[in-house]
Image 1 (tube, rainbow, N blue to C red):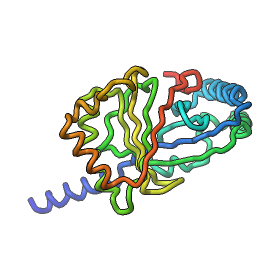
Image 2 (image 1 turned 90 degrees about the vertical axis):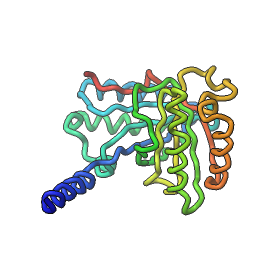
Image 3 (image 1 turned 180 degrees about the horizontal axis):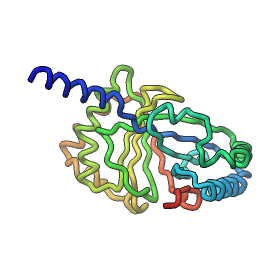
Image 4 (image 1 turned 180 degrees about the vertical axis):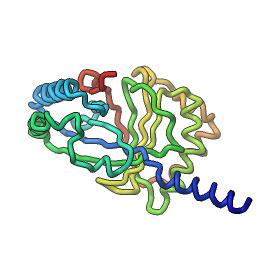
Amino acid sequence: MRKALLAMVTIAVSCAMAQKVDVHNVLRIQLKPDKVGEFESAVKELQTVWQKAGYERSVSVWQSGAGPLEFLMVYYTKGYAEAFDTTPPASLRDVSANVALLRARIAACALSIDRRVSEVVAGASLPRGPLPPFVRVLRTEVKVGKTDQYLAMLKEMVTPAMKKAGVPSFVVFRQRYGGSTSELWTAMGVNQLSNLDDSPAAVVKAMGDAGYNQYLARRAELVERSEVNLFRLRKDLTYTPAN
């Protein structure tokens, strides 16, 4: 009996160690004001090349609503090795030269390109579904040594309220490469812009007045600074593999 129990524990630990993390990859591209059309044209041509080649990975494109003109190119990988592997997948080997040229055209349109690689925090995120038309993105710099407490607060107070409020999506990302590891991002789906004018917001209603005030107090103890923006899904620039 003891040996059987030990074997079960060993198998469980081995499976946990072998499980790949869900990795969120983002290219943040700030464009030259006179190069928006060229950027969009190059992305659409890249889509065509990918589609004909049968590229397997989805890539969504989002446009900033405020601040500098910025586009996000977002895709997911299963683990960091896959995220950083520069070897072209089998489906793109015959068109790798075309892909490289189009990526160079995209880069030539940019004032800056910034890549961030983050880990999806499964326990604090809702299951991903269809892409919403907008996302409200909150970037939070957590005080040193307070990251675990901040994530615990999200899991205890924020994620349940998001679920209760019926938001279309809510994903939490913990930054791992490309910036501070004390930086966390949350992306809340927004179905329509009129939702932004709801007062109080649906999530605040879900928390209740007392719960929301408790959340604000705990957040103030844990957060160094934060910034928020709204991004619009560019469906015309988003690539979805053919079924």
